[in-house]
Image 1 (cartoon, rainbow, N blue to C red):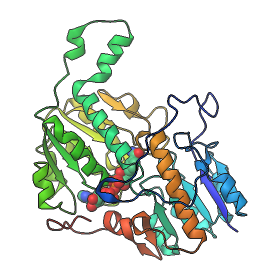
Image 2 (cartoon, protein in one colour; image 1 turned 90 degrees about the horizontal axis):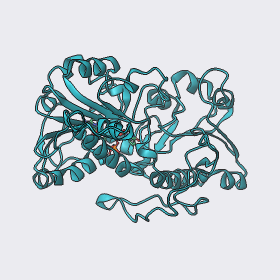
Image 3 (cartoon, rainbow, N blue to C red; image 1 turned 120 degrees about the vertical axis):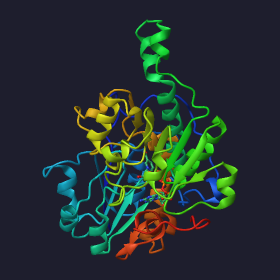
Length: 394
Ligand code: NAD
């Protein structure tokens, strides 16, 4: 029997469960391209309920305990005295979400002597030191595709919020004002703008497909070039580097995983090559951007706006400069944890656990590392590799 340590964000301050705005979430039957949804033998929650907080427990507690496993669920994850640190040494499985990540550093992995499986309930496993996991042969899996569309929708929203300058206009309305000149002095149409997508994986492609009807000029870069028919369908221009891409965009959206290659990529030097008044929306990982370089670019006017929902670290301290920098439309890390998205990644987490406990293989698209190396989605998206030719996108 295993000990499963689950780190989740705290319950709503008004108590659990919250008052839901709707009674159901629509049923989605397949992902774009025919990829299949999570397929657990059963679920022990109602889709649309809050599952990502401690009391929601990803709908796993009753089932895991009925199978004889020990389950610890906590939101207390920071510092040597935290519940996470105390429970880690004899945990077999650790589960957390990127929104409230249980950082599994090399140090912590060394102390977690029994750890065999780490699950990201969601997408993006950079909060686990993947080299340390590989050195120990620990399996790291995530629920690929579970919230890709959730993030793509949030990205489109934030692009529009920045370009139209929604935040200023809403503030004026809320404060009882009616000064139209103030409300529109930074407001533009998205139509006709050049939108560049950094990394055209599942989220990047969903953003391309959703923004195309706005009449924008689309371009992208990725290590894997998309098939020619896809580029033609969306009028996409391919750039072989981010350096080349950012010179020719009015809006840059960021969808690469955080790796040694992408950490700190959006720095002073790169930002200086963007057209004056460009916008950036980064729902990928906060550490892909240099925190202070973004603030400087907004203050100097090089950037006209920055939005996203990812920070470094998480939760971000109250004094993090991105909370108050000019022309930001930041949200806390929420895009991938809509109630709709939670139902899918909770089901996917259960599917991974069911297969693990039954000694069955985890689907390759869920695997990041296994048996000491990058596998499945990890081999495609995280492992270092050169840019490839057209048509080789997995
Ligand atoms: P994906 O694996 O489908 O796509 C990632 C793409 O990045 C791949 O096409 C890969 O080739 C490309 N890539 C990797 N390194 C690159 C590099 N150095 N240069 C150019 N391209 C590179 O993943 P996805 O589902 O599209 O998710 C992307 C990222 O978004 C995740 O890794 C995660 O960090 C983030 N994410 C955020 C949220 C959120 O709630 N904000 C939710 C889900 C995912």
